[in-house]
Length: 43
Image (cartoon, rainbow, N blue to C red; front, side):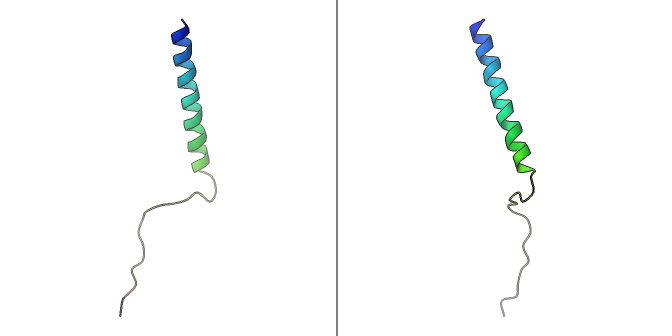
């Protein structure tokens, strides 16, 4: 029974952390990485 409680606690903590990180990433001013960049002529 103790093992099951610990497993459920670990799962709930992990899902809470994942939810906070996901919510934080959707905030205003989130950092965008990658994507297309304008190419300037090297004349």
